[in-house]
Length: 256
Ligand SMILES: CC(C)(COP(=O)(O)OP(=O)(O)OC[C@H]1O[C@@H](n2cnc3c(N)ncnc32)[C@H](O)[C@@H]1OP(=O)(O)O)[C@@H](O)C(=O)NCCC(=O)NCCS
Image 1 (cartoon, rainbow, N blue to C red):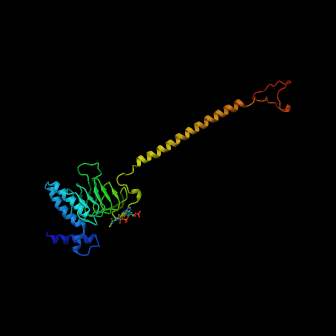
Image 2 (tube, rainbow, N blue to C red):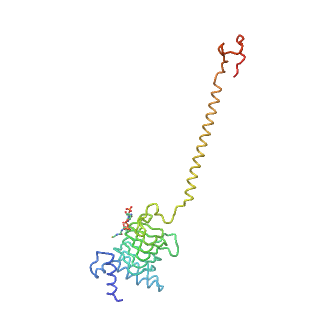
Image 3 (tube, rainbow, N blue to C red):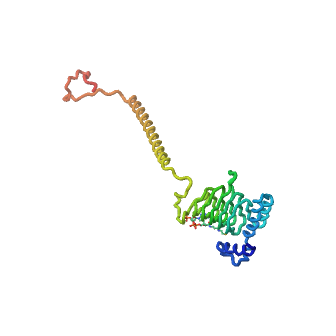
């Protein structure tokens, strides 16, 4: 395809995603257009083993457009970066067809991985302004990453992810309730039941210990009271109730 054909095709792509574009000549004003033309040359150089020249070209493009695309990255058709300043695309990124990025997006590594260490964006993915997608993870077809999100876990197709760390708020156009958001750390019902039982058991143990303490204290108090209590007075019955003879001060039945 000739230069003008490419321009017209690019115009159709940009028109779909940016209502601000008016004529096909406006395409020339987009940093994305320039960055992609330079990327294509740099990528060819990279594939043919001229890695230094490839990187030199990519750095030149970064200085001119604010968009840094590593020449080793793979990018499909219909790619569009709106505005573009501050976009960084890492070496092992794989970008499908019709992907859209906004300014300030990083498709980077976490610094912990070797080899494939940058994300894969499937067809139709949109990554909003300032979002960071980090590590060798896959963002499924047609998923959207919200502005400012930091995504470090894979995202299934047709989802919307927002926040830091990124959480899925929509799946297949359905709102995902907050408690169902975590797709990777699924709840373990057995562990949860065991924790409830453990808590109940601890409460019982504490209650038994407290009761033992209470009992000890009661016993101690009873002993002290017994020690302090005066000797029992001998019991005397009224004369008409007596079935024994009281001889002077002598009592026959002094214990009951
Ligand atoms: C994420 C986004 C794409 C919207 O996707 P969507 O599927 O239509 O999602 P919704 O608008 O229904 O939002 C779903 C929930 O996420 C929240 N949300 C949306 N975008 C968010 C963001 N960037 N950060 C945090 N939360 C966000 C909404 O408030 C809503 O929460 P709620 O359900 O508690 O009310 C959009 O909000 C966004 O971030 N667009 C930025 C585009 C951009 O970069 N433009 C720059 C042009 S220069």
